[in-house]
Amino acid sequence: MQESETVGDESLPPLPAQPPPPPRVQYMVESESTELQQETETECEPFFVDLKTLPVDQVRHLRNVGLLPAENPSAAAAAATVTLDEVTEDVATSRSGNDDYGVHIEVLEEHTDDEIREECNDSGEDGAFRIQLLRGKHSEYLTRALTLPLPPSYVSLDASRPWIIYWTLHSLDMLGSLPDETALVNVVKALDSCWEDSVVYINATEIRNDAVLKDIVEAEATSGKYQGKIPLPAGGFGGNGGQIAHCAPTYAAVLALCIVYSAGVDTSAPSSTMALSLLRSKRQRLCAWYLSLRCDMPLLTVLSGTNNTISGERSFMTAYRMHHDGEVDCRATYTMLAVAVLLNINSPLLFSARTADFVASCQTYEGGFGGEPHSEAHGGYTFCAIAALKLLEEKKLSIASASVSGGFESERRVEIDRAALRAWIARRQMSYEGGFAGRCNKLVDGCYSFWQGGAMAVLDIWSNGSEGEDSRTDGIFDDLCFDREKLQRYILLCAQDVNGGLRDKPSKPRDFYHSCYNLSGLSVTQHCLSNSIGDIDAANAIGETHPVLNIRVERVR
Image 1 (cartoon, rainbow, N blue to C red):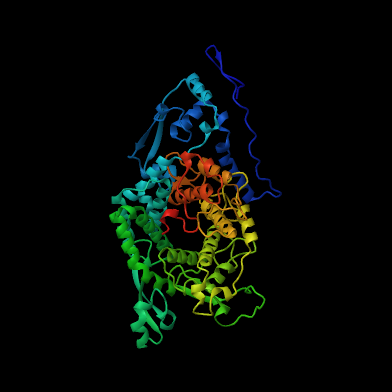
Image 2 (cartoon, helix red, strand yellow):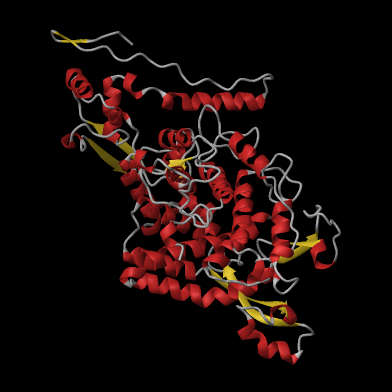
């Protein structure tokens, strides 16, 4: 780049010097994994350029697409977006995977170099070069999923209907752009169609005094007709209509219904009333269904405490299946507990010390958590595990142990190594890109902005002993134990698609999943344990998400 430029007879000031790029990751041994990492760093490198050193036409382009603030209001509409709806499926798929609604072309106005350079030089403050969250474009992209038919390529997500609704609804809620009442009513109806009824058999003596189920089992429990087990109406949400009940879409559906209910409760909106009615009608059935998913297994570790003798019921730990005859892992435990907390299902049989034992047993030698004991540590499972333990801790587990041995405080439990967990999460933040990877020796991925960033937030809030989730407290950790500024930089620079939506990394297409968890991670960096909220660019500020439940804190009622 030249030291200075001349326009007509006037000499323009020189551009600032290019700062040295961030240091690349160094390796002692080259391998296929290090080659992939180097390719990813090269992919992200163009996004980390000092914007003040860009040619003025490129700066103008960034302003036109909305990534930089316009210097004056009249310049904000300098670009027009043309949508080509009549494109073949092959063209759409080749551009952005399975999410395209059409190809978007940015048509820019022409400006002379001296006009552009003069405008750039007139505003020397750093605010003119802060990357902006494309709030309007993201909202438009996400809203289409709730109001228009999805493209044919989405057939692969046919079993994820509640998830698509949750991803888009939660993202729009954080952006402050929830859809209109008609769309919200349709959301409730769509989720209701995903409900699947069933009948389960539970030991009558277990649930005779259960706070949730006792009023529907007394007659059956005294008859003795079923030799200790009685039939209970149960059910959960499936991935779509006619599919089996599953913990994952049940979690997504309940979160989405809580958003709809809370968003309209103050105005008595019909969608809010419908959502509340649906949740109330399913509460007891969900409790019975969750109890039928329990899976007891031998305790695989030594309980904490001076006396390590294990006997009776405490020689087992309780896990949960994702669905009947399904896999057993800590995702099922977390999703079950999250739904139980939101719906106030205070069943002693769900919030048990044995449940905490299973989750804690999933911690690996690395410090993170795997899906089950003795498996590899993973960011998604780590969030589920630490969030589940936090939910159990909030209940103090006393309701679970009251019917066993007089309270959780007298129970021994498997302890977790918090220091090792914190170190493992911190090491997953990539030193060059600034985003998180999901596992050791893996590549950066935008979705782990929440799975790893949220797990660290839950851990640090827990360590501070904060009772509430509005976690701006002066405790042991007065800031998150990772570089929140670098994570925000990755989300805003590398994860945003200029046509709306967010993505894994620059080479990947946008999608609803990554849009949700990139924005959730951004919310965590802005609000959790933050003593510098005032430093957030107002244009990029989004709603505060609950770090454990991942819906806005206003929706947790």
